Image 1 (cartoon, rainbow, N blue to C red):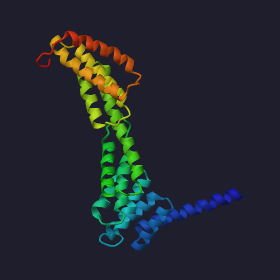
Image 2: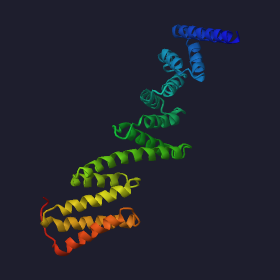
Image 3: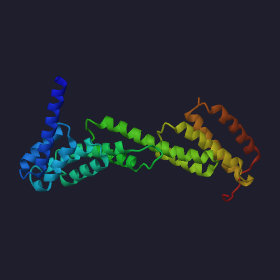
Image 4: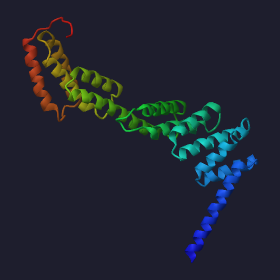
Length: 271
């Protein structure tokens, strides 16, 4: 019996709430709609809150409540996990009210929403790149913000994703024995992401790529190309003297020296 009464009571509350919400959407009492929209937000009913704020948004244009309305609309989009819309809403707020006290929070939320939108590494990384730019802008403007350590962690995650995507692209060329393309991609990856956690693997495959290019070149080109591979070996061993790849690379290093002993430098054009 108690259970039935409770269900009946909850149903009455829901019907009352629904009826109230519909009346508010049609109400001419804009101050009441504004207050109720805040109440819905505080209760976690973000859809109804956003609907109510949106219904009176134009009516508060130029009034003191205007920034609050737009701020709540953006927060509702975020809390509904509509991050694409939330980015637009927060950007609109920053543009419309550049001196408002909530601009700092909105600029952070722009970066954070794009961070949440960052997709699987194998997909297009436009949102990842946008998040990094937005976080960098935020830290430039607010270098002492209490969120700075967390933001730097987010950016490390985002950069790691970008470096991994570039690494996979270069590795694909390497596995298909397209070594010239692999060298270009590996070099770019090291240049763009010098601190990447894939650095050892990249440098290892970069050395191997240059070795294979030299080994399969015309003899007139081999001296220069084996010399480049030898330099790559020195770079690698200097950074990773105890690498799992060290022994394998040392064997190729000996091969390089054997070739260089019998080859002579030549001024030639690339093949």
